[in-house]
Length: 460
Image 1 (cartoon, rainbow, N blue to C red):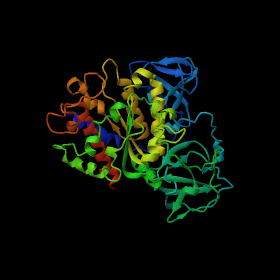
Image 2: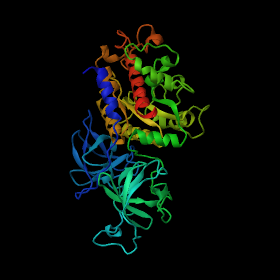
Image 3: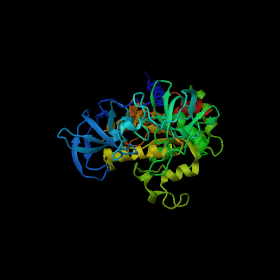
Image 4: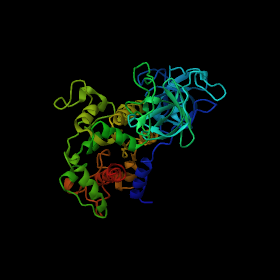
């Protein structure tokens, strides 16, 4: 299989949606396995990348996962000697669903609080079993399906999900999905025909938020993210580039905006150029969240935001999304993180970047990093792949396209992608003889993922 075919296959696989989470098993939360990488995974005393390291785990180690932080960035695991510690979630592959893991510090209400067939609740509101209900469009970020009234979340149901209502109690509905999964949802976010099912005021958490995910931290696929973005005013034809010098470079994407390209046998990609050139022409936009030398920590640092374009206290990432209102974000960090951050710091930062992107209604496209002379990039790229899989977002395997090129597609500095002789005017030339250069492959990969998202999501 050619590296172009592998690239396209990777993109298509990355666009697959996450399946509906299954009910928690009788055995409790799932186990996790540390991903393979070139160094051990730090186990920390607290869910904080600055916390003390209490142990290290080699790649392939299996551990029980006891709890997770509410933002899903950290997992509490149990070590072989019985003590507990915290690891970055991006380095753990689960053998079950993340919703099976309890949120640390949050108690699950007693099971008897939920009515059952054997012990019907005297407070249950009579309601005939009803088909044809659905998750209301008001739940644009997804509606929590819980195992009990105000209990643990077992799935996130996108707006429009068909439901069968089995019963009702105290502002909650007992429902069944089309695949047979049952649970409880807030009745305020369920619609029957054109009307919302009458109910008491929706139950709220201690934070005062209704039982729906307002920030859509874990939407089930790119369609849900896109729908949220449309609801909050994102511009369909806008995209952003997020990263370091390899993303900020004049050789990346700018040639399309200036008409300096030759698509060769990839003529179908013209549709993506035409689409994203509309309005402000994202190919020519000066990025706020991509800058030479940056790491995942820098894009989250308000001190590094553009003082002329950003608000006080605003991070470069938040500023980029506020000013550009993008539908898509091409995200690639890691080449500088290799030498400046630990692996668990990188994973925690990338997780935060993805969550902020999704909550903005912007589709994050995570990108594996190219080779770098003198460094093993395998750990970084494993985190990129596992993070994309966990959130159900696209992953663009730029590394796979680079390794088959002469000198791994790198320039003489061993860090930046190579550029054809002639420079800018040939960095987006997809004809024979130019595809061996790193920046040509970068432009081809970016345009291919933009085309795929346009064709499969945005154009519909």
